[in-house]
Image (cartoon, rainbow, N blue to C red; front, side, top):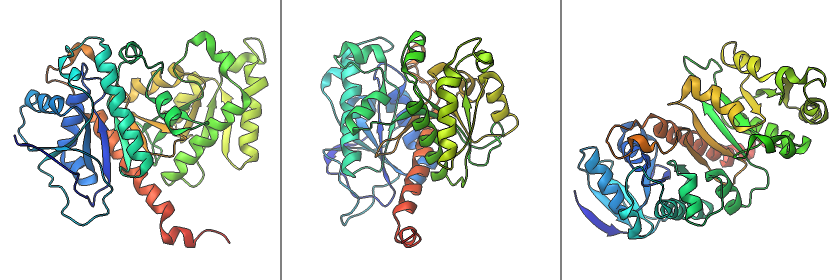
Length: 369
């Protein structure tokens, strides 16, 4: 394995930053495995973001020897020069040597700091336009907190650093055997990482409407002309006309009506247990709006744990991730599967292509006026 330091060469493929996540977990392994996969190499120019020593450890773990180029800075692919070879890895070295001293499978503030440093660098590069997208390997929320960063997870860090007032966490399953909708099935969440007891107080008509709108925009970027969006009720049986709660009548129904008035094909609120079946089995909907984390995550992880992709809606940049966590129980044992990471990268590539279509001269010429 060769190891050198250089400036990042320009690439014809969209440069996509892959953060290593929590170095005590499976993030480095799945990021390296995914970066080496032919499908990924054909779709994007992956750049691993994190400590170069961790990348080399991950390569030894999976028994692969490839050249590793350590990058001093990321520069936009707009200068002359050859595209990086597809038989090498590029690592943007970020963070301190403390990352090398983190034991596998344990909560550690040094791992939390390493994950935060890599993510912050990748966000800054994406905002500057020097990378086309960010794909994040999982971090551990407790390690992040112990490192002094009071965020519940990736989504909240991204929203804060990007200044995104309206944002949402969304899981996306591509079209296939489990999902019959031709553009896949997406489920966006009105509330994020918070206690179940706090959910009713965090809901509002405005917040629900914003999530519906963000989901509609995402599906349109994937090519759906008129996405069909189903909205979950908060309470069992959609509240049974107030018997089990009034959130449906007081907030969710008005938000759906507001979306319809704006030309969005939104329907609901429907009981969550039957709505998810209608979307998955009967293909009645392209997108679902869930009121809280587990309402959406449980069914999606049940049917497509290795395929579901996490997308942050409402950001000025593209960010995706696999839907799994750090998996400390199998960390650094060489057995982690990278299907989720590959799916996240390929979804990011789709979103990059969609953004390029939207900003192309041909697209601009079709705009009214």
